[in-house]
Length: 436
View (cartoon, helix red, strand yellow):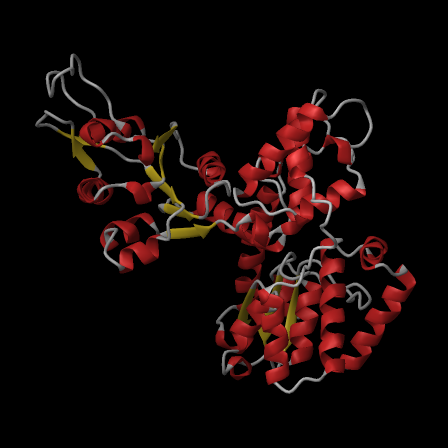
C-alpha cells in the first residue's frame, strides 16, 4: 500500500452494491468469481480496471487473456515489476488523458456512441492519434464512419506546425492521370499539361494524407506509393528533381486487406507500411444501443433549432429492429426522410415514418434470437449445462447488460428489464451471494 500511495493512488472502500469506476483489483488466482466481478466493476470494459496478480504464477495458462475478455484494461504481475507502483500510475495517467479526450466535445459531437465496442475503438483511435505518429489503417464496411475517424486523427495529431489534411479518394483516380494526382507534374509532361501542378504528396507535406478506399489502388501505383512511404521522396511526372515530403499517412478501405494480401491482390510490404496501427470499424448491427442516440443526433442536425424531439416508443422499437445494410450512412438517410415529414414541437410519431419503412401488416414480434444465440445454447448443452443453469446465466447476462447500458442506474435498468428496482437489487444481491 505504501508504494501505491507514493505513486499517487488513494484507497477507498469498495461499494459492494455498485462497484464501478477506475480502480485496481489484486488477486492471487484467476477464478470465475474474479471474472464476474471484473465484468460488473468495469461495466464490461467501459471503466478502466487494472488487474494485478500478487504473484506472476497466477497468470499461467492464459489467465491474463481471460481477464482482458472479462473487462480488465490490462493485467500485470506485482512481483515481476521493478517498480509496480510507478507502472500502475503511468497506465492510469495515459488512460485518463485518453478518456478525457473521448468525452470532449470534439469527439462526442462528431463520433456519437457509447456502446462498448465503439468506445473501445475510440480509445484506440485517440491513443494512436495523440501519442504516436504512426500510419493508421482504418478497415470497415461502407458507411461506418471511416472518413470521420481519419479527420479526428488529424485533428488530434499533436505535431507542432501541423498543416492541412489532404483527402484523396482512390476510387475516383483516373488510371491515365494517377501519376499526376499523386506526384504532380511539370509543364509539358503530357498533352494538356500547360503548367506545373502539385500532387497529393506535395500538398500533404507537413500534414496528413488520407487515402480513402486504398484497396482500389492498381499494382503499379502500389509499387510507386511504397517508395514514397519508405523514402519520403518523389519526382513529379516529367521532372528529374527529387522532392521531399513528410506527412502522416491514414488509409481506409471497405475491403478485407489482410485477406487481399494473403491471396496476392495487394502488396504485403505496402500494407504493413500502412498498417502500423489497424482500427476496425464496428458495423452498426454490432452496436444496437447506439442506434437511437445516432438517430437523435442526426435529427438535431437536420431540424430547425438544432434540437431533436422525443421519439414515440413504437418509433424507437422500429429503429432498433430495422436492419442497416448501409450502416450509419443508412441511418442518417432515414433520419433525413423523417425530418422532412416531422412538424410541430411534439415527438416523432409513427406517421413520420415513410411508408416504405413501416413494418408490414402481417409482421408480428420479430424473432431476436439469431444464429449466435443458438450457437451459445448448443455450446452450453455440449458442456453439460441443464435448463436451470442456462436460464440462470441468461438472466444474469440480461441484468449485467441492462445495468451496464444504464451506466449503473438501477431504476432505468429495471424499467428496461420489466421489473421493479427493488426486485433488481434483491436479484443482484442473491447472485453475488451465490458466487461467494
